[in-house]
Length: 60
Image 1 (spheres, rainbow, N blue to C red):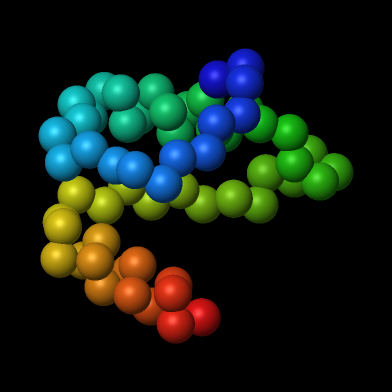
Image 2 (cartoon, one colour):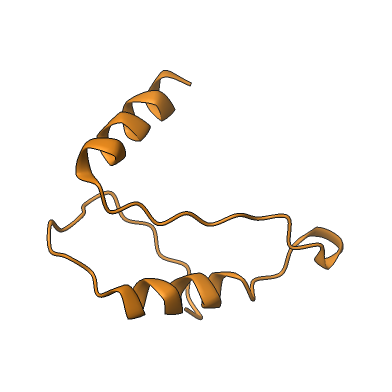
């Protein structure tokens, strides 16, 4: 997590919940404006919901 990475290619493999929780914990330690931590993280497993979220984001 010490280097920034951006990806546009995603695997269809399931990610263990423990890794998702570790990623959220790590992200929660990132600096924020005035150290207020105004971020909310949501992990979505349902592929249909993820597709609808992506469509809605692309419309925005």
